[in-house]
Image (cartoon, rainbow, N blue to C red):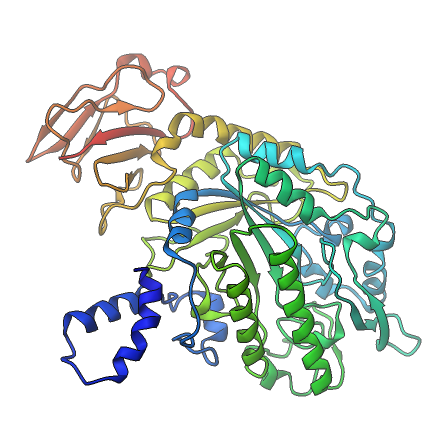
Length: 514
């Protein structure tokens, strides 16, 4: 029986005769409930926990165990942000839109009319990923700016005319505001899904709850259109402080008809993503809406689950209905304080979208060390890059991904499909990290700094007579174990010269354990 199904199905049993509070059944139920709680430190959970119930409704099901297992096996992926902001030169996705003047916003919203990114090649992108050890990609189908990178049939019916003769004003419209209305006309999401599937990549589609182009979506999640009831509609909304660079415009509250139209379009676009592009492994939801529309958003989540039961839903905007969460721009300092699966998202350059400055790209060493550290703590690591307006990645981004791919061809055994060791045994000191096989038969040790002529490990007891091997080195290591000192592994004299070592970033050993 799947643990998440059990948790929900057992609910009816609790309505029967009262049993001892610490019976085996009660404890099992508590365990299964506890393993699906977001950490209270998660910033996006904090934004919604006041109005989204911690215990999902009885008819809800999380993704099945097999999907969770596959998620935990991935370890390494890429996050791709691409949209009109790439043409505008924004390195922080569409966020700089909030700091544009009204006139500049009007110009930004017209970029799509001439956008023709002929450098985009889905096969080249996905080959780069698959050949260099990335097991999944997440692609931005629609960021907060509201531009859809897929062939949506849904129409925007009202938008803001930012350059109106007397200032901003609402105007009626009828357009998809999507990539298929550009001179390019191609469905980018379709091409990427097909190319990625051919190469065995797992697919995540990012989708923003808020939409700054469609006026029906005001005022949720930093929308530049403010309304009198903003604080009631969006519980984390606050007025811009003095000196803020963000430019807002005050407009009337949305009508019930506009709210209904907003939620219908929101749901329909998500249904399109789970209907038109084959199996989607992860739906990377972002930001939040608010308490007034949460009942409709909950219906949407139930609908999506019925359409693709195996899809993993990111928790942003939906609380504990989510299957995983994403620490952003940092690797947690310790093992996760929740059993909910997690995946770090971290930009390779200054932001998640294209950055032309080569000096901002953090390097292969940075990726490898974060990947090892994250895997040791039980998470996945997703590096963020973005192509330019033509559809091409920065040469430094490509080179650094390739360098990590070379490292993974040597050391990947200790990363993919591994699990964290128990308690605090994921590390020793600042420079040693551990992972293990699922059956606990092998521990993998990674040194983030070269250990010198020998390395002593105090938390690993090797199997008697086993061969300890080093990734990328053909001969077994010399070792000895003393219960008072620990496991001492010698490194060959021939490897002491930097240019003779199996790689330049982090060194790994496989140890069969007792």
